[in-house]
Length: 358
Image 1: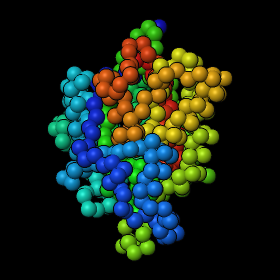
Image 2: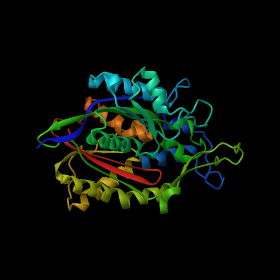
Image 3: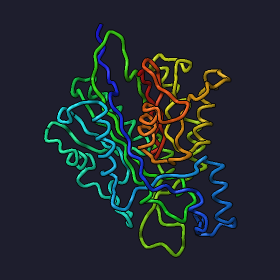
Image 4: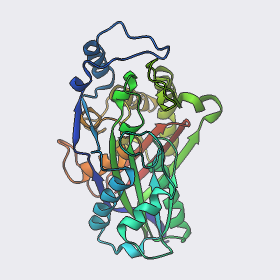
């Protein structure tokens, strides 16, 4: 029996060059959602922030770059790594949430689509390389991979480029403590259809959307600074409720995907999870292993980049994957035959997971 499956054959990422450390926020005026200044000093706030999130620094793009630019940079690297002819691509899927936002502005611009802009930057002439965007919160890149898998398994596509790119630094309220979570970045993969007598590549995936109760967990609203309400809106979140939602739903969602694949958690070599909050991701991992009655978590099973890259939304997982595959993360390695679990949670609220064999 011949199986048709999707395999990741090339990866690439772009790390912005502006490094912003927590100390850079000292001296900033922070306000609560009621427009009241915090009693604690900004130094105390940044220290507490590090304790809660494990984030010590993050990356921002330089002023002349926008989201489609860095998506293009990551795409070029993925195409080169896969060794394919870019004209053979059947799909170009770009996951983002805010489009191209120019420096000193927070206005979204995604007409034409970012995927169309990336295709233009790549100078791909093939009209059958279909370019489109996906806005799905932080799980957007993984959902793009899931869609590409459907195209490939149906025979509609043979090669697809899936990119996650975001410049969150352009749409955050500088007077909101949560603004320190966010970062910029881009990651990309090439997916190709393969055939074999045993299944490999993507073994299973699943997605859920809890919009009825939790759609407004992340939202856009005015600045918390009472004197800065100029009509601009910024990314906001109900952090504590989101944390509770993630812990109560993500571990089971991952288990459901593993059950669907027939793979037991003990077979998983790496858990590649959206880098949202270091402490939250760690709590999710512990709850996942408890679902299997496993008290001991294998060392280095969950590689993390959030401490030095922050939360770059759709870019976190493909960036993490590329960094690990290239051996650039200490004590982390992915080898042929390893089984991985990918998982993400974010605005919507949306959760997805994917089981993958290298």
